[in-house]
Length: 113
Image (cartoon, rainbow, N blue to C red; front, side, top):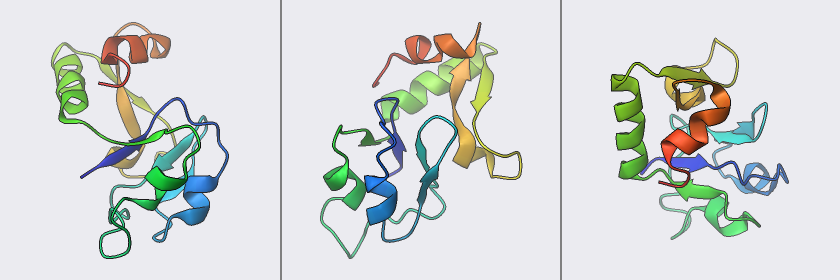
């Protein structure tokens, strides 16, 4: 199951420090999870370690409803919001879509899905 780190992230480093696969790295505004490296802690923990250690609950499963909202925005011509170097894979740095301005992204995405 894909995971994401929400805007509630306080950049405390707990998730990155405890991630057994080093899939969590600092982003320009909050930590991000590389889905190509994340293993869901399969075989190590019953619940992913990042879920357990985050003091504000910012590490969450990426819900199907979130994916659906992003697809709907893309179909309406919304532009992707990219955080991180261009050299990274798009699925790693693309966190959503916006139509008017990046600041409206969370409102359009419906918050937590």
